[in-house]
Image 1 (cartoon, one colour):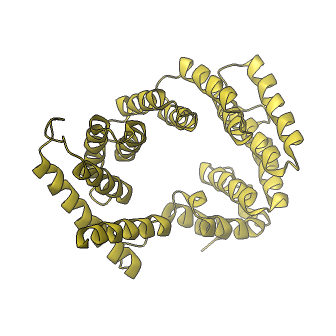
Image 2 (cartoon, one colour):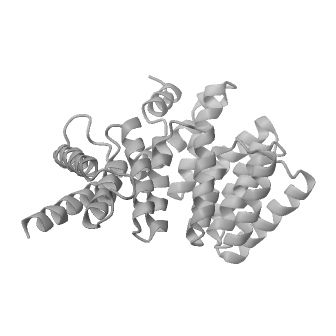
Image 3 (tube, one colour):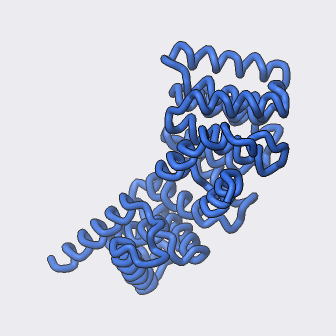
Length: 306
């Protein structure tokens, strides 16, 4: 099996290799081998896909030498002025910057490029990401708003804008952005869960807001049966509703809330048990989220005992 086919097989098996440190490390370790092989000169779509993934993995793991070589070969093939290659070059400059001053210079270069072409989306997104990293939140919000003016169907940008508004405690705006995401992706269970979470924070534990949060969280687990975050939120919110009086006046039957709470407890217990045992097919859960779910269940059990 050649190095190229090995890497392609690995990328097929791990479609989001940058999500986990171990998959990024594995890819970056293969970069010097691939770059020195005859196959690295093949001009195929698969070869350039590998180059891009190796570039990103090497930047993440600190192999700047291999990353630079990957970037150079991509630039030679597609042109340094290509929007995508320009964005990758900017990412390289960000990753290798030594201090905030150098990052601000990269940010200025992005701004100069956007003056020439305000709709260069790869550069726009790098610019927004860097502004966010530099804690220039208001500037990032303005940049995202400008991007969405010419690309209103960009769900990722709506989601990012929601997160920035949430950081500023602008919950109504954050909720609006998430609702825009759902207009584009109506079955995005994770967005329903996030909408439930933001409504919960914004509710200040008032009944109307808690009920709205519960509805969104219930929808998230309806769309994805084993979504841990959704079940966690549903367990938390229904518990808060049951601690208060007035759920009937808010248009929710207490019996139904109790049923959802019990179902959430059952599902969370099953997820925690199987994930901690590492049963086959249950290895993909985030360990911190599994532990948080266990603590929530234990806290709920302690209240029941008292």
